[in-house]
Image (tube, rainbow, N blue to C red):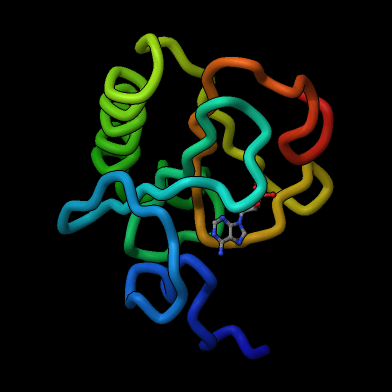
Length: 118
Ligand code: AMP
C-alpha cells in the first residue's frame, strides 16, 4: 500500500466498500464502527483526509467543530444525547487508520477498549 492509496474511509465514501452510513453531507460522513465497543459506536469522518485530529485542527478548525456538532446530532438521534468523542492520535495510542475519525461512544461502553486504555 502506498501513501496515494485511498484510505478505508475514502473507500466507504466512494461506496467501494459497504458501511452502515448514519449521516452524510458534503464534508462529513458518519457510519457504524465495524467492531463496536459500546451500544452506540459511530465514526465521524471528514471526507478530506487529514492523518490525525491535530492536522485537522491546525488546517481547518471549523471543520473539526462541525464534526463535533455531527457527533452530538448522532447521539441525540441514537442515544440519550450524551457521548464520548475519542480521537486516537498516533500508533502508540491505538490509531490504526490514518484518516482522522472521531469515535462517538454512548451507552454500555467497554472501558478502555477503543484503541489503548483511555
Ligand atoms: P482507530 O484504532 O482509532 O484508528 O480506529 C479505527 C476504527 O475503524 C476501529 O474501531 C475499526 O473497528 C474501524 N473500522 C475499520 N475498518 C472499518 C470499516 N470497513 N467499517 C467500519 N469501521 C471500520
